[in-house]
Image (tube, rainbow, N blue to C red; front, side):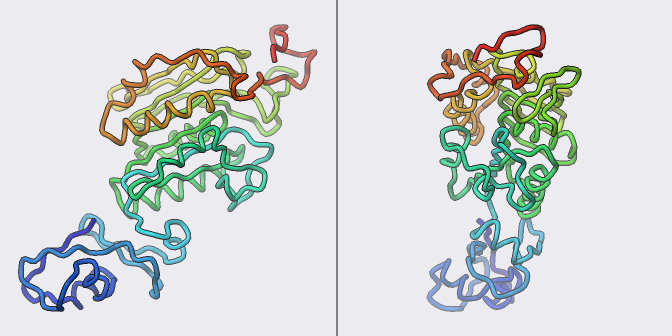
Length: 327
């Protein structure tokens, strides 16, 4: 909420012009009975106008005037951009990569928001919290779409808290994003069984193909990540087990690698969704979310409860290490 203290010579017209809003909106927001102002009077400046006629919307953040293209403002936010927390959820591997402009799960015809898994995080949407759910991608487009929106929110409010949650390739997309943009602060990331899927789906140095891709690479957490909680499983073949993340600078980053007992690669997001929501709430409440998660005793999960069989290899005769399929 933006406040303004009336100075000598101020009028409603002057203040409205300063903020790029109308006199009527100030009168309505403050229940003013007349246009007469008193020196020292404190006014609430409404920055949540829903309709615009000007080409650029003006907002004042930390006493700095910024200009926001009207098209972006209306398309992405509809209402006030001043949020305290923005949560980006990147779901696991889908059958195809999203097309450009269709990276949001709700816009991707080959995907949907998985409300039985990480999509449940959308329940946290509120006046001060905005949740976006994306499809993961083997290409750069999901990362680029998320990055664009992060920069947008940080331009409007440079103290907005950025929270990222991802499963499988979605987790890998998030880790890559943090590594590639060290100038951006990520306040909390939560990853689940990170998996880097190559476009071919071939596991390097083997004849084995994994549905949706193979290979796990990204595991470095740089100092621009302030808090990280990484959940992983160990019930499936090593090539499908999630990363143990490597925190590069423990003085800058607080983190924990936490085993999800009994989970497999497909079930871990369904198994942990309520705990992840709890982690996010703890963080937003100012608690030490990482330490609480680390000390939490998780139950032993059964993937059958979420209809999540172990991933089968396409090439049965060429399983690494002569392992058998335990699906």
